[in-house]
Length: 181
Image (cartoon, rainbow, N blue to C red):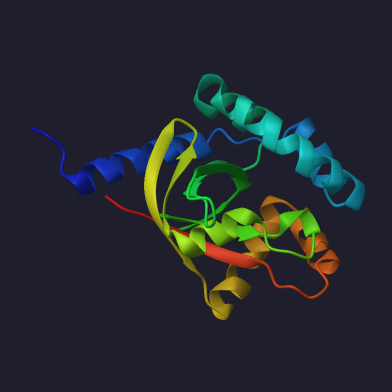
Protein backbone atom coordinates (compact mmCIF):
# COMPACT_ATOMS: atom_id res chain seq x y z
CA UNK A 1 0.00 0.00 0.00
CA UNK A 2 1.53 3.40 -0.97
CA UNK A 3 2.35 6.06 1.61
CA UNK A 4 0.15 9.08 1.99
CA UNK A 5 2.04 12.33 1.57
CA UNK A 6 1.97 12.83 5.36
CA UNK A 7 3.33 9.31 5.96
CA UNK A 8 6.07 9.90 3.39
CA UNK A 9 7.00 13.16 5.13
CA UNK A 10 7.13 11.36 8.51
CA UNK A 11 9.40 8.69 7.00
CA UNK A 12 11.76 11.37 5.60
CA UNK A 13 11.82 13.20 8.94
CA UNK A 14 12.77 9.90 10.62
CA UNK A 15 15.73 9.64 8.21
CA UNK A 16 16.73 13.20 9.15
CA UNK A 17 16.66 12.19 12.83
CA UNK A 18 18.92 9.20 12.04
CA UNK A 19 21.35 11.53 10.28
CA UNK A 20 21.33 13.97 13.20
CA UNK A 21 22.10 11.12 15.60
CA UNK A 22 25.46 10.74 13.80
CA UNK A 23 26.60 14.27 14.69
CA UNK A 24 29.71 14.14 16.88
CA UNK A 25 31.66 16.94 18.51
CA UNK A 26 35.11 15.62 17.67
CA UNK A 27 38.50 17.38 17.43
CA UNK A 28 37.69 19.41 14.29
CA UNK A 29 34.40 20.55 15.82
CA UNK A 30 36.21 21.76 18.95
CA UNK A 31 38.78 23.66 16.86
CA UNK A 32 36.13 25.33 14.69
CA UNK A 33 33.99 26.17 17.74
CA UNK A 34 37.01 27.99 19.24
CA UNK A 35 38.54 29.59 16.11
CA UNK A 36 35.15 30.37 14.59
CA UNK A 37 34.62 33.04 17.19
CA UNK A 38 37.38 35.20 15.69
CA UNK A 39 36.86 37.80 12.97
CA UNK A 40 39.89 36.48 11.08
CA UNK A 41 38.50 32.92 10.88
CA UNK A 42 35.09 34.25 9.78
CA UNK A 43 36.72 36.33 7.05
CA UNK A 44 38.53 33.28 5.67
CA UNK A 45 35.72 30.79 6.12
CA UNK A 46 33.07 32.93 4.43
CA UNK A 47 35.17 32.57 1.28
CA UNK A 48 36.31 28.94 1.67
CA UNK A 49 33.23 27.35 3.27
CA UNK A 50 30.80 27.92 0.39
CA UNK A 51 33.23 26.14 -1.96
CA UNK A 52 34.31 23.26 0.29
CA UNK A 53 31.20 22.51 2.38
CA UNK A 54 28.83 21.46 -0.44
CA UNK A 55 31.45 19.00 -1.72
CA UNK A 56 31.94 17.48 1.73
CA UNK A 57 28.16 17.35 2.28
CA UNK A 58 27.75 15.12 -0.79
CA UNK A 59 30.21 12.51 0.49
CA UNK A 60 28.39 9.40 1.71
CA UNK A 61 25.00 11.16 1.99
CA UNK A 62 26.30 13.67 4.50
CA UNK A 63 27.84 11.08 6.82
CA UNK A 64 31.34 12.53 6.39
CA UNK A 65 30.17 16.04 7.24
CA UNK A 66 28.25 14.78 10.28
CA UNK A 67 31.26 12.84 11.55
CA UNK A 68 33.97 15.41 10.75
CA UNK A 69 32.27 18.77 11.33
CA UNK A 70 29.81 17.70 14.01
CA UNK A 71 27.50 20.65 13.33
CA UNK A 72 23.86 20.33 12.30
CA UNK A 73 24.23 21.57 8.73
CA UNK A 74 21.89 21.65 5.79
CA UNK A 75 22.01 22.80 2.23
CA UNK A 76 19.34 25.38 1.51
CA UNK A 77 18.01 25.58 -2.05
CA UNK A 78 16.27 28.85 -2.91
CA UNK A 79 15.42 31.01 -5.90
CA UNK A 80 17.41 34.24 -6.16
CA UNK A 81 15.41 37.29 -5.10
CA UNK A 82 16.81 39.42 -7.92
CA UNK A 83 18.10 36.90 -10.45
CA UNK A 84 15.33 34.30 -10.29
CA UNK A 85 18.10 31.69 -10.59
CA UNK A 86 18.56 28.66 -8.30
CA UNK A 87 20.84 29.33 -5.32
CA UNK A 88 22.30 27.03 -2.65
CA UNK A 89 23.83 27.76 0.74
CA UNK A 90 25.32 25.49 3.41
CA UNK A 91 24.06 26.62 6.81
CA UNK A 92 24.04 25.55 10.44
CA UNK A 93 20.49 24.95 11.66
CA UNK A 94 18.62 24.19 14.84
CA UNK A 95 15.47 22.15 15.19
CA UNK A 96 12.22 23.34 16.72
CA UNK A 97 10.03 20.26 16.61
CA UNK A 98 9.78 19.14 12.99
CA UNK A 99 10.80 22.59 11.76
CA UNK A 100 14.34 23.70 11.05
CA UNK A 101 15.44 27.22 11.89
CA UNK A 102 18.14 29.31 10.26
CA UNK A 103 19.80 32.56 11.26
CA UNK A 104 21.41 34.98 8.82
CA UNK A 105 24.43 36.30 10.69
CA UNK A 106 26.57 36.64 7.54
CA UNK A 107 29.69 35.77 9.57
CA UNK A 108 29.23 38.96 11.61
CA UNK A 109 29.16 41.33 8.65
CA UNK A 110 26.80 44.30 9.06
CA UNK A 111 24.51 43.22 6.21
CA UNK A 112 22.04 40.43 5.67
CA UNK A 113 23.20 37.41 3.63
CA UNK A 114 21.65 36.96 0.20
CA UNK A 115 19.85 33.75 1.09
CA UNK A 116 17.66 35.68 3.56
CA UNK A 117 16.45 37.99 0.78
CA UNK A 118 15.80 34.90 -1.34
CA UNK A 119 13.54 33.41 1.36
CA UNK A 120 11.70 36.69 1.83
CA UNK A 121 11.02 36.88 -1.91
CA UNK A 122 10.38 33.15 -2.43
CA UNK A 123 9.41 31.36 0.83
CA UNK A 124 8.95 28.01 -0.94
CA UNK A 125 12.36 26.34 -0.76
CA UNK A 126 14.06 22.98 -0.23
CA UNK A 127 16.62 21.75 2.26
CA UNK A 128 18.98 18.78 2.16
CA UNK A 129 19.84 17.30 5.51
CA UNK A 130 22.12 14.32 5.08
CA UNK A 131 20.49 12.03 2.52
CA UNK A 132 17.06 13.70 2.72
CA UNK A 133 15.67 16.52 0.60
CA UNK A 134 12.59 18.25 1.98
CA UNK A 135 10.29 20.89 0.56
CA UNK A 136 9.83 23.66 3.12
CA UNK A 137 7.96 26.89 3.60
CA UNK A 138 9.95 29.72 5.22
CA UNK A 139 8.74 32.50 7.46
CA UNK A 140 10.50 35.10 9.58
CA UNK A 141 10.15 34.37 13.28
CA UNK A 142 8.74 36.87 15.74
CA UNK A 143 10.84 38.52 18.46
CA UNK A 144 9.76 36.06 21.18
CA UNK A 145 10.72 33.06 19.05
CA UNK A 146 14.01 34.75 18.08
CA UNK A 147 14.90 35.21 21.76
CA UNK A 148 13.92 31.62 22.59
CA UNK A 149 15.87 30.05 19.73
CA UNK A 150 19.03 32.17 19.66
CA UNK A 151 20.62 30.32 22.63
CA UNK A 152 20.15 27.07 20.67
CA UNK A 153 22.16 28.56 17.80
CA UNK A 154 24.92 29.62 20.20
CA UNK A 155 24.97 26.12 21.66
CA UNK A 156 25.29 24.64 18.16
CA UNK A 157 27.98 27.16 17.19
CA UNK A 158 29.32 29.66 19.77
CA UNK A 159 30.53 32.06 17.06
CA UNK A 160 26.96 33.31 16.63
CA UNK A 161 27.22 35.22 19.92
CA UNK A 162 30.36 36.98 18.67
CA UNK A 163 28.81 37.72 15.28
CA UNK A 164 26.12 39.85 16.95
CA UNK A 165 28.76 42.22 18.30
CA UNK A 166 30.26 42.76 14.85
CA UNK A 167 26.98 43.48 13.04
CA UNK A 168 26.77 47.13 14.15
CA UNK A 169 23.36 46.63 15.77
CA UNK A 170 21.76 44.91 12.75
CA UNK A 171 19.68 42.04 14.12
CA UNK A 172 20.10 38.89 12.02
CA UNK A 173 17.02 37.55 10.29
CA UNK A 174 15.87 34.22 11.68
CA UNK A 175 13.62 31.90 9.71
CA UNK A 176 11.45 28.91 10.56
CA UNK A 177 11.33 26.39 7.73
CA UNK A 178 8.33 24.11 7.99
CA UNK A 179 8.42 20.87 6.00
CA UNK A 180 5.53 20.48 3.55
CA UNK A 181 4.12 17.19 2.33
